[in-house]
Length: 379
Ligand SMILES: Nc1nc2c(ncn2[C@@H]2O[C@H](COP(=O)(O)OP(=O)(O)OP(=O)(O)O)[C@@H](O)[C@H]2O)c(=O)[nH]1
Ligand SMILES: [Mg+2]
Image (cartoon, rainbow, N blue to C red; front, side, top):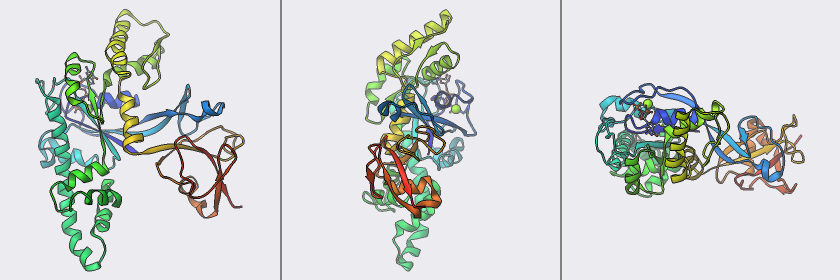
């Protein structure tokens, strides 16, 4: 799973990326600081079953802090997109191509209105940047879809196969599947204007991180941006909190609405922490960074987290490690689908499973978020 961070230059993408991954990426107050994409691993947070089941877990492929499981997710920080990016302005075509592997996008938006859609200082309506970004992605995608349709249409007719199947084969490199194409076709024909927009909505859902929400101008403007997919955010605040935690000054769980001072911060550090508390945590409930990641992956992309174990009595793997692995799977995944993911070579010997109540579950059992299951194999 790869999440792409997109937005106009200077909006705070690299700051968001650093906050979410604590990796290094250059941050500066001018456009096009980032040219080459940055890759690093961040975490999604979800309730770990260890609390509910009253056990101490020993995560192997993830982490657990205070009953919160941290599930890894790859993040990609790319260069800023400007108006006419799809025509190549500001190397926009190349930057858009960097996003092809992403399953979903977080649009990091300067919601303070202090920079415009080119990342330059201005007094600006951030809603216009949202329009710009969606337009640029749609035009870029539209160009690719048009070429693909022209290539596939005749072949599909001659070979009597559905055109969407051929297009899906061609577009699979863009992370677009047949189900995405089918969903878009319900709204538009592939040669209609509007098809790319439908396809983008189906294949690359976007959450808007209304960033720089710590600034007073943003607080005035947020009302106008409000929407189900918009989350007030302060990447800079999250970065400061995670750095303070790393240096032992505070205890803070990513995504939480509070922190405790445990070290001895200087007066300046205390003021900065107080500012974050007052302007972000108390006002919005969190800095928004973790909320953007979780909302995109768990709600927009419909993923759930399940915990396969080798021994349901001990809730452990073969080495006795309790709740070792968190697997992220799409909602609707069955026990048999999971078996195939866990043991790619053993799917044929799959016979069923057991839940935490030691009850037998069958191949068609549809997994629920937080399920712990033992998969049973023959032999
Ligand atoms: N007040 C405030 N400033 C922020 C926030 N996030 C980023 N900034 C500032 O915005 C400026 C740009 O940040 P970057 O992270 O470099 O932005 P970017 O989107 O990666 O920029 P490009 O790589 O040039 O496209 C820097 O001066 C940051 O310190 C925030 O949450 N609040
Ligand atoms: Mg950057």
